[in-house]
Image (cartoon, rainbow, N blue to C red; front, side, top):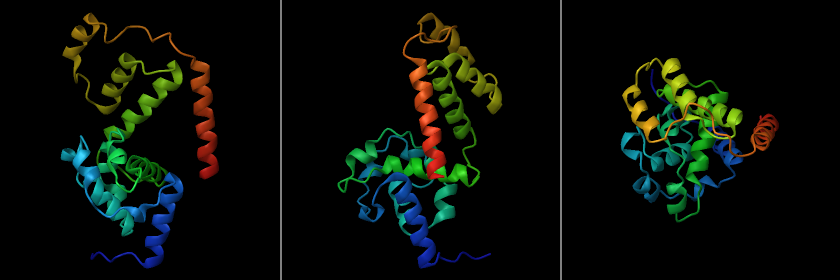
Length: 189
């Protein structure tokens, strides 16, 4: 099967979809590469951030949504801070992840979406991350049963991990924020 470039309408529709979701003007990106130069995880990505931005501009929907880059992005916002055009590249990556999830696009980094779901569920339940349960569930559900298990005693001794969830913060306010986010997501649909 040969690849055919997207039509102008397809390219514009994809660009509009991303722009609406992240409220960014993506054609401002002129490929300076500063986002990639500052990215702490670019070394492990299949396409560096500036290439993802170009892929979006060119309407390369499948390539962009199937890339591991959108899942490996740490959302540290270094790229957004460095952009001379003020494009929030981290918001674009987030929008791409959302679209990939909504469209059921399978990630080559299958453990990353699992980690995201467990991380958010932990915050929603406890008001902040409870690492012990979250990492235990992650290891079981991802099939990495004994990953980092030898680190646990050291982390417990240094009080970096606990047996009980933290009792700080207002869990009710966090749950309300999650409820509002789900409601907004339904509206944006």
